[in-house]
Image 1: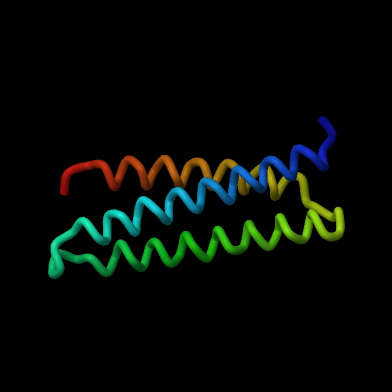
Image 2: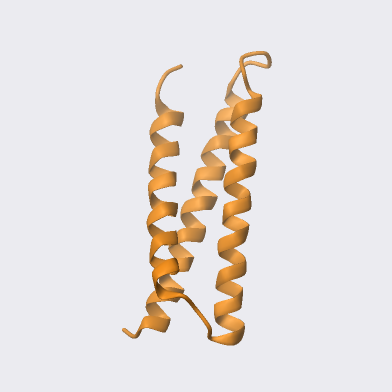
Length: 95
């Protein structure tokens, strides 16, 4: 597998990780009672959605031009996976 394909897979993983984190945070927002600090979950979901959008733009740039940053793609994949795992742990803990 060449670096181009690896960067493509890494950015896809980063995008999926960020979208998973967003989904978990939005789900937590809707599960909370109306006056129990729901706003923080929606704010976090908005932030992770913006990061997912950034990964989508990087992926589109890679596919359109073939230009990529290998290190940034790998770091994005790790960050996306870790954020999804962290949101999963936080959202599944009783509050």
